[in-house]
Image (cartoon, rainbow, N blue to C red; front, top):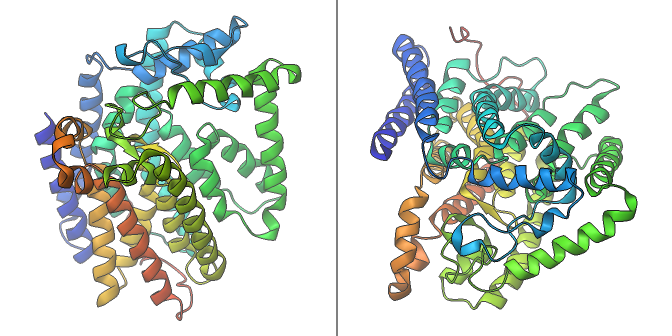
Length: 445
């Protein structure tokens, strides 16, 4: 089935290119293709529910919620897979525990199926949220990206392997993505800091995604958002711990679980010794594949994240008044390379894809080629099948070139996109901000 969906992704990518190049032609068959892409997405999800791995990650979250409701420590839960069964398997921050308690209010299998339906709905709406976010970065009254082209991009993302992987596992990536993108869409009203902080707090169930995304909220006017966000996260942490007196114990438990699970070969180890590390996206993962020892790679991972983060911050501060949409794109790509992610976290790059598509409608010359490469690389990163990476990792010990250049392919692609967008924003900087992204076009119907 994988090859059919890869073929559909290729068709979708070519349709996007056609819609960019010929915005007023072939709209009837592009509409038909959008319907096909989303129907295929739903059909693939229905078929996936028969898999033995259906909801495997969600079952850990459900169990954690059940533990909290029963007054037990969720960080003593062991992994689901046989190789992880002897060791801790739950590592989400305490502020995520109230959400997991809500999961545990229904029977486990029913909760898994309900969460899958929610994830499908969130994925289907990502294109609209991302389009609105990019439109608001350009001009509050701008026409925005053509809805048909935006829906095509949304269909390509929904049918990608990264989305399939996340829905099958029952991951939180889609909730996080929708919440963070939604935080960019909140209108400028007196309640904006409160609403924005609430959405960011929801996105905080994955702190490693929230932290880099906050680079987009570094204006002085965002100070109330930061204060309210801190209050929300603190309240959720206390609630998840069962009271302020238990907060310290929860953090000690999660620290102990991290230490046990980070031993070489276990679930949080990102080196080749861990057979489940094939889907990891991080500098740690990349560096251990090119031959750097595990301890040095962990140190360099921190250094690289900090240095690149400071560089992204400089870009955002310098260019957010002339290229705010590109700054959003840069941060969305950086966010999925920060610290530790897996390929199911990649849907956040839909923000970058919408920005790139809107720019392709206007640009010519070298900038146009840069944007084409960035869009192609993101589609490719979304569709790297982790099953193939798992098979390659199994034989990579005797093939160092394979380990160095193929296994970290998603990370290489994302870093190339990050560099491309930084170059693009520097080349774009002399010209003033466009007042609209694209001419108004008929809505998708």
